[in-house]
Image (cartoon, rainbow, N blue to C red; front, side):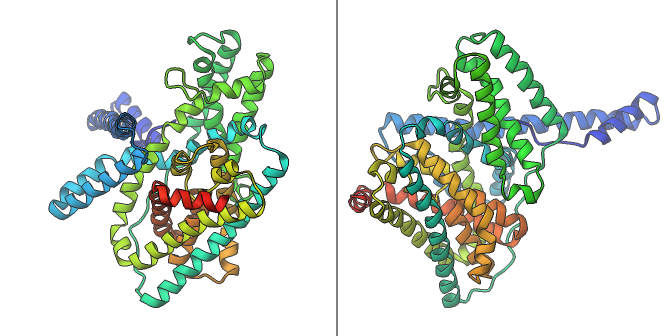
Length: 458
């Protein structure tokens, strides 16, 4: 997908030219040192990301072996955050070194985060076949109306607590923004797309199975869609969000492959997400990063630990109320609209990031993970397009209230949209984004709480 750049290509070319023409003897040493730094940077990225993925994998295996229902990645996040806090208290330099070591992997995850949500959208047509049109309309009404209600409740709660505690707002730690995609990355993935498409048509089982053979083509179509969508003008992104462009690109690729191979769309989508570790599809590879997304929350929260401590009353009160309101209001409205129980359960965590929402619905029997992911993504898209104007109309000017309300109602997609224009709200978005999913997971892991939700649903 691309690695962090260690140096600028123009500078490297200049140094190479100098060394070839013999302008200076120092330039040769400079090129060698630059090359070493670049190699070291790539290795650092591979090791840091690899350790995060390995931690997620081992935790999943351990929890599955012990028959523990609680999300393993969430437990891992708590452990990493605890280690960072303890190190910061005992040996601050060690905490900084620990954080810096994993920084390349964390940046990679943040850069590609929306891409990991897409597979659920791509295979949504397979899930929607079993859902009546009337039920789909009800789900849409709950998602849109629920987003607005959650935004209002959370924002007003944050404002109320802010007025009560009267804590002065200080500057937060700067949040590093992911780098834009380069033309080299786009060209590289385009080549992969074209070559793998031809190979998939000519040799459909070259890698043993169709799922593995189609994987490079379907993965490249998904990645390219995200790159193209991310490069669109901001005005166009309001109506055509990068994640929609990404899903559309993958869907069109699946349609083309299904038509030309005469296997059909449904069959290709079945190869896109196989839910098999021994025969993975492109979607399985992307969804494999969802656990690492949760682990990365530990580093985001640690970076803003001073902010969390200073504004703990506003943050924790607002997020807890928001989480409880979102879950129960969804259950109540689902019952009032006579939505099927399984579908109501599937959309309960509509305001929680996909990485944790899918884990939450796994606590309930009969839930459809694809519907869950689609509801979460649609909530995020609605928020990304309308959150800023809605907050203005509600006269919520405080950056703490705006940040918490946005992340609690429309998670990562809304956060990205708001923080692009209001960077001062980003730290509070990041904190609420993580805590909202954490509280939702903890609450739904409690049997009594789950039973109360099911009783409301009816």
